[in-house]
Length: 328
Image: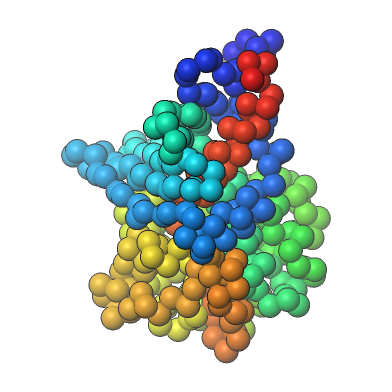
């Protein structure tokens, strides 16, 4: 790349294109939490539309792609993020790009690499949920999964409570990961297994790419808040589906998440769980329509990632890039 030219220069009449380097340079300038909170309030007020995700399978079992759509009426934009899951002989390839268009002209406005955007909006949504749902005096934080997504979660959540202890666990833990985690927060200690990691936790963040459960709620010594993101493998889930009956359940969007989240789909199909049992979503929490849980049982928050989150952050990136462009 020619470093003397801004990667986000706007050509007249053309959509702006932001590659990974451009997104990386702009993201730190955004207040992701505030953007998401404003967006969820718009959702609660009917000024934003969140269609269901669509999963499209590739021929011959080669993988799939998920389309994340959203309409942000107050910004006058709509868009879609497309995220493929491509099977290989080794680790699957997962990428993402977001397209943004104008509600007023129907013209394309933006095409951006969404890998880093996805990491930030996923961590930001989890942080919102924890701030709304976790007991105010929570002291012990547990994190399972210490890759880029897990590290972003820790950055977003570290200041939400006065944590006296932060335990982390990763199946692929090594010296480099350990150093990265302790650099984010010096309170981090590494657990040898998931049971020790979550045993006394007030909040447990699951940030893995596992398609099957990584913990059992029976390993909790007290009712805790568990957050889960999982991956886009078909019916992926980080907790046993039957466990939903034993928890107060929240999610990012109650109208669309239960049809896509693996443990919810399987709990409905196999364990007579009804999605009507979802207590509320981030729009309900942001608008004050639901209150904090009582913690007479564990609390579960499930995020599948919303097109509206992608659209809100992509629109903010667009505005930042336009402000920085010499052609504006």
